Image 1 (cartoon, one colour):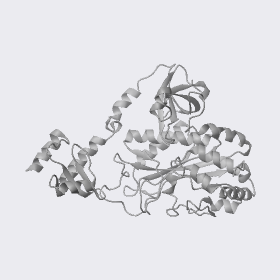
Image 2 (image 1 turned 30 degrees about the vertical axis):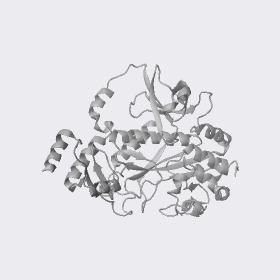
Image 3 (image 1 turned 90 degrees about the vertical axis):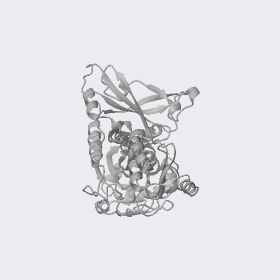
Image 4 (image 1 turned 30 degrees about the horizontal axis):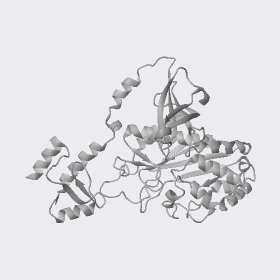
Length: 437
């Protein structure tokens, strides 16, 4: 039987089937999986080929075998590597006068992070102890090939939780050949604004939501042929049937604490495979620095587990919560007695430039948030500004305790999970402190 030939081919040849294609209809959420040398074919094309007799439908058990094999081939190399072997080499002592410094920067997408490492002859104690470096900006979307050098200016220094010891992580700003900031260097202007308003002591706390995905971009832990049960039991849940990926969350938490990131906590979110960590309270520019390094650590830790971390604001369509980056904010006057009046004044200013903030709260001028801010799933309307006490369906939420105390902070629930924290915090200060409406 040709099925026996297929099984033999799987064992000896992998996905090399020279004489025919194999496919299965309605496999994996309604899509046809057509396999030929490991490739997938759209459903309509599969139907046309079936009607002409050029392919025939494969029994489910053989499709399962093939897809399992295909997934193994898709696993990232880091997930296949034996981490115990790596530990053996990481325990090799390095000369006492040498320090490894990993330079980290935001790439041309405004969302992705890049890194590379420099050996230094002494341990840096502050960012200025590290030299300005450069990289190939044509490979990161930040320069043309004919003039590709982009400069890395040291900005914030952290301990390295992977190499440990004296080794460091260095967050950098990116500058063009003419020493002007690149388009995705939002830190430069944010730092200037934070310097202008430092007497107001602006504090921020940002709640970073994210979704774990496996290597085929399917939510981690979700069934391949359907969906988990409705939302309800997953938020802050406990148990293998309610939360997925806690090991990664715990590893990331420890890495942040070691690095010096002011991580405040973490919890499982409403949608299964969705989590959140909180950073803050941080004053001024430190908010953006700490959140970007926390994101770097999230991706870097997940790399060792072979899991993808998505900051997409709406990774799954349908009756599933999106992902945001709720931003808690206060100034010194808001935290004083009767500060509720200052909070109300700030909210009034925010109401006058709602769409300006919406466009700045994701890296694509509001297009990403359009999928998330629908008025459903604990979100406000994208087009209408609203505020309320303890209302998670409003643009701005005043915590109930703040209302009772008459002072404290408020929460802007509009920023998307993939927002740039430098842009969000800068604009918040421009609007509420400098009065730029």
